[in-house]
Image (cartoon, rainbow, N blue to C red; front, side, top):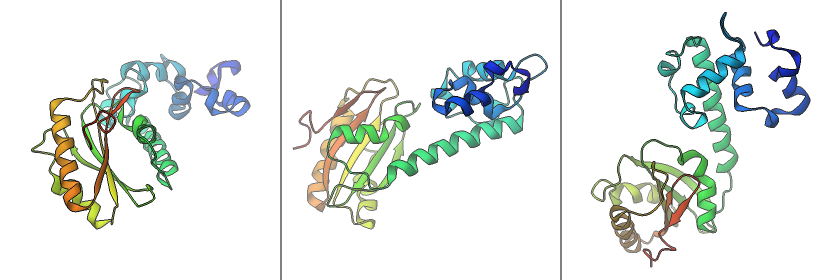
Amino acid sequence: MIRDVPTSERPRERMIQEGARYLSNQELLALILRSGTKEESVLQLAQKVLHHFDGLSLLREATINELVQIKGIGSAKAVEICAAIELGRRATAYQTEERVVIRSPEDVANYVMEDMRSLSQEHFVILLLNTKNHVLHRQTIFIGSLNASLVHPREVFKESFRRSAASIIALHNHPSGDPGPSREDIEVTKRLAECGKLLGIELLDHIIIGDRKFVSLKEKGYIL
């Protein structure tokens, strides 16, 4: 149990005295786990879980089945970890979704970076904006390697009409971490921009998300 850890090392006491932001990932996870095993303290178990998933980047996508494969993590602990991660994800989405205003590519990157930079597959996402550039809606259109034939303008603009969007911003991630545009990225961008002009819903930008880096295809000159 956490009470078996020396007082100076107990994450619960440290959190009360110093605040959650001063705790390490290991300590926060130990609070969720609450107890260790006969062989390991709760802090050791928390460190083992983090090591197994190479830190938070993969743990945030872990499933219950993956977690219970770790010795010392039963179904109850696995459920608690997944619930805490999902709650954090929803809290982040709730905080950023209200009245988000997009004025620059940096605004887009800041809005989605933490959600998208560590995804293991490419996700093609659109942001729907009103006339004041407030985000009305965010929707994932496609998951998988980007391909002009798969990212169809019909799917991209269908939701735009339904929500009366004035403009859209397309974005997708590169799991490699390198946001440099590929030939397919450029082709998709040009196709969506042309369709947007015909439909009266402007494609403002196409942002590629890397690992804490991004590229704006508008700034690169591929959207006129």
